[in-house]
Image 1 (cartoon, rainbow, N blue to C red):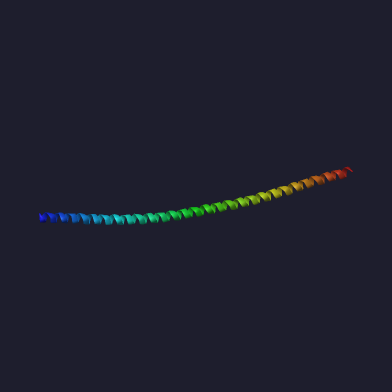
Image 2 (cartoon, rainbow, N blue to C red):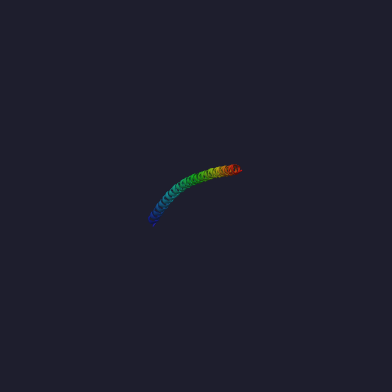
Length: 103
């Protein structure tokens, strides 16, 4: 009976040792997975920052192009106004010449 108890204790100690070993392996694997997750989170944060920077740059370029288009549009309106004023001036001069010729 003592030998049987000794074998039972040995078997239980072996099971406990195996369970502790498995727990250590599980803890090691969890630590590895946590490290991988942390690395992936850092990569995701870097990609998000890069994306945000690209969006900000595109928005700045769009605003800059918008301002340039507005400036070109204003210049065109000024040129059209000058051309119209010149045309009206020419027409007025022609009418004046006709009036003077008629007198």
